[in-house]
Image (tube, rainbow, N blue to C red; front, side, top):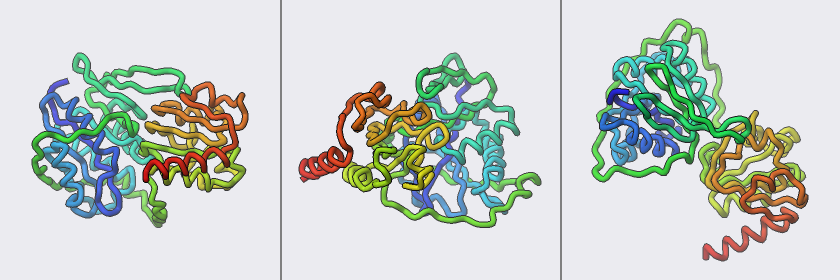
Length: 326
């Protein structure tokens, strides 16, 4: 792999600030660039003004701002833009945060360009000129290495896979506009309505460093889970049973059919540890389990286990943490 620019898809919030995992990707991109520039792809109507300080601190050379007469929230339109930037920049590697939307986008880009795709990677390197990724599969029971044989690699990376570090000497990136030629196929799709999710004040589940999860054992009362999450500054997740029962929204579901997470700290309260849930959280750094059943499968993978009533254990833990925090 020759020294060509490494592209990073710049996920951002509605106010134009970058989502935390993007800093990790930019740090990773610098280690893979081999002296070549790191460049970002910005897909929004607003200018990347709010993001520029972080991009400068990460040593980003150029921001490719996509301009289109169609909605860039649509994966097909965004894919048109990414294809255009790949061609214009000559980049052979694109990194993106591992989200449902980004996975759909890179899949569309791969179909149009013949690029190789790896999703949910937790490590990326360049070996003998090829992009090689690391990822866990089969419900977290196997760790694999996958080399991309195609000339262009598109990789979505799990949050918390890299420690973000700023460059010693920040420099203001250049912002270059790319007018996207939206394909006829993309124009057949139209976004008719968008509902903004209310801000809970907690970190995004997929990228949070700390996640507190409630399962069947909560019996529908997530207040101890939410309290502990708020004390720790973490996100709240749930098992499939909890979401199917309507105790919490489906966007909080973690597992093979939900969100895949890899936080530094996972705390499961009343979570049995069924295989479909483990598939979405087994890559967590440290796993803490609280369950009244000593035979619960989650204790098999837990780094620290508490056999006890979550309605007793979690409030005590929250109270002690508040005391230590002063």
